[in-house]
Amino acid sequence: MPKPFFVTEKGVDGDPRRNRVRYFSPIAEVPFCGHATIALAVALSGRDGAGTFVFDTAVGPVVIETEGRGAAVTACFTSVEPRVAEFPDGVLDSLLGLLGVGRAELHPGYPPMIAFAGNWHPILVLAERGVFDSFVFDPDPMRALMDAQNWAGTVTTLCEIGTDEFDSRNLFPVGTITEDPATGSAAAALGGYLRLLSLVETPRGVVVQQGSHVGRPSVLTVDIPSSGGIVVSGEAVEIAGPA
Image (cartoon, rainbow, N blue to C red):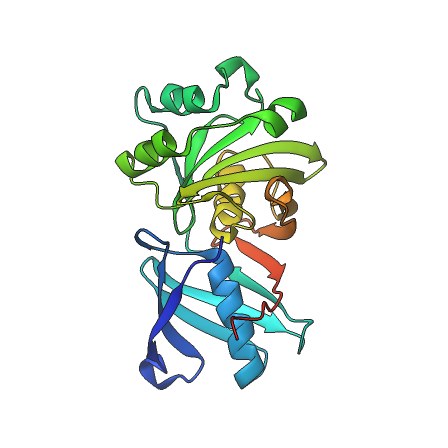
């Protein structure tokens, strides 16, 4: 889902490629937004040339690398240091109840946790593709739970579809929108989750597919170093605005 972002200060500390940035959903300011970060970096690359940019965000400085030109620009950002946390008492069961999913339908190799790499994202990995594809939810109670838990990012549900590859549905009920087609901060949170729970050997790369359930398929590449921020890469497509 597109999110408005604003450059509130150009040339921070005299660096012309460093900017202070704020992000907003239709209902609130959010600390960080991965796909908006990539979109802004690609737009700046068109004006200032590809290379390195630094965005000062509410969660700290984020470094973005761009390469290419015109319609063939790719970008990657390095997240802030990731963290993970347990669900508070009763919250996981409430979340699963909203999805109509039981604990037995979660993948036993991927414990449900809340992960942070700019935003806090619940991470749920479902064992069966059919359950992942077919679950539905009521947006209003989901929004209420997310607000109550201060989850500014998405609820990240995943299904393992191959070695080092996941399909992802990122729930973000706002107005007529229910799911986000590409979520860089969730991809970074997933990378942090996999490393901090020792679910992969690092350094490691994983691929996250997303958006097919809302007709906007995307692919994000997540590079998981042995320490430090998680690197998320993707391409940007220019969308013509209103005339």
